[in-house]
Amino acid sequence: MILSDITLRAMIKSGELVVDPLDDQGIQPASIDLRLGEHFLKVDENDFDTIHLDRPIRYVEMSRKEIVIPPGSFLLASTMEYIKLPSDVTAFVEGRSSIGRIGLFVENAGWVDPGFEGELTLELFNANRLPIRLQAGRRICQLVFSRMDQPASAPYRGKYQGQRKPMGSRIYQDSEIG
Image (cartoon, rainbow, N blue to C red; front, side, top):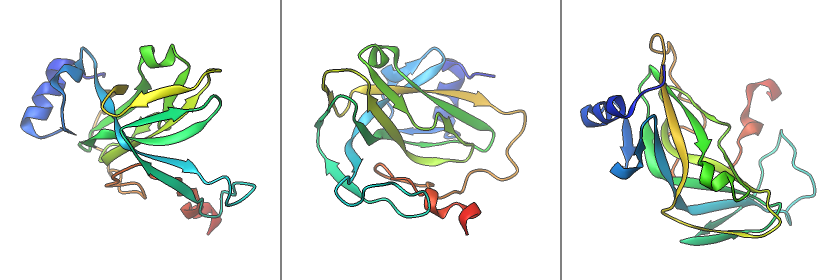
């Protein structure tokens, strides 16, 4: 069941759901808009010629209030908001329609597990033929929340728990390679 603005407001007021800092205008009828933070990562293309899934990837970290994403470029960014989900709520990250209409794809693997807390790392891809200039503090994506039929037996406690700033891939830590 998708949670309504009324339910989201009540959960935030009770502390069951955390979205901090909360922009009250960001609460939509069935979602909460999140804003772009000031921290970014890009793969350090000068460090290696191929990305391997079983090795750490080196990133270049940038902090700024404004960033330009060239055509066909990929960048990791973080949300301004720190979120904390209860063990019976999951969330879907969706790009805002207005952002998608300029050719910017926003993703974070699309899913936030119950029990997750942290700033979200967003994957940004400029599919346009022109550069796109983004400003920190602008609404960039939305979270759609859904209540599960019962709390998760093992809420998220994974390798991205508690993250601040964008976090590069930690796929090399996955158990199937060990």
